[in-house]
Amino acid sequence: MAVNRRNFGLGLVSILTVACAKVPESKAKAGDSFWALFRERFILPSGRVIDNGNGNISHSEGQGYGLLLAVINGDEATFEALAGWTEDTLGRADVALHSWRYDPRQPDPVADPNNATDGDMLIAWALSLGAKKWRNRSYAARSKAIRQAIRARLIVQRNGEQLLLPGMVGFVEAERVVINPSYYIWPALDHFRAVDGAPAWASVINDGMRIMSRARFGEHGLPADWLQVDPTGTWAPATDKPARFGFDAIRIPLYAEAGRRKALSEPVVAWWQSLASSGQQIPAWIDLQSGQVAPYGLSAGGNAIMALALGRPQPDLLAGDYYAAVLQLFARYVK
Picture 1 (tube, rainbow, N blue to C red):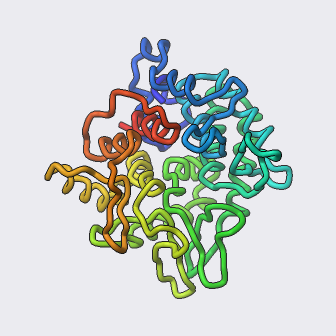
Picture 2 (cartoon, helix red, strand yellow):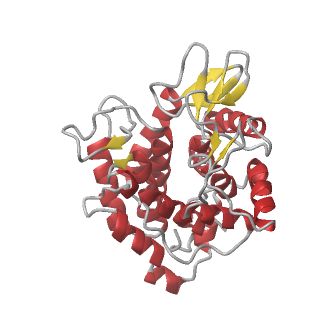
């Protein structure tokens, strides 16, 4: 995200913006080579971000990441294409959210109308940034509508806490509510609080931080990819998912760093440090119940997050896999 050093004029309480503000003007004009490579590899001219690790599908998460990277790199043409494809193809007619998945291999590429909350948050955040940067009222209006829909449809109260649902359908049951802690994108939530006013988002943020501080499991006290809470207020790894700190939860330390909430990632950082200091491979996942670890190490994206958290140099090469590459780019601009 390293191009425009004017801090976007947004007043954004995000460490990402601060990082961009420090990039020299000469580099801004040249653009960032990682962004150019990402755009070449993963963004079609139509504005569709392809997930090449999942059959070249597209999803609202990828569109949101693409929009965010485009605005921070000052790439208005790509941003416009991404925004247009996202709304035209994934935008729902009944609510200002987006269907989560586009599969070009299917007769109906958007068969499932359910949303993914992290995708909607990334899209709303990026549109708000783009509205300010390029003085585009339609981006601002769309962002506001998405934020309102998130508050109206994706926040539930249980046991005196406001929970951010992963999607509209499938996560609320009589005996439990399921959340994904990596969907708490702290710099986005802080931005929403800044533009909408604190009361609209304060409880979601504060309750989310409390949940992340205590919902830690296993020998190392790590967060799980998916969590559930029962009517007594007891948190546990979701029973219908692998009880892992893995490919979802890897974003928790990333967003904690970006949102200036390092305390939320302290157990992860301590575990990584203990492995690194003894020369051990950092596994891609660990089972929080059995202690079993993946037989393979972190991806390039995971290594970028680990390097960020441990204060080490970022990887020099952009990954050829969409998810690893997008994590690399996000981590690259958190300073």
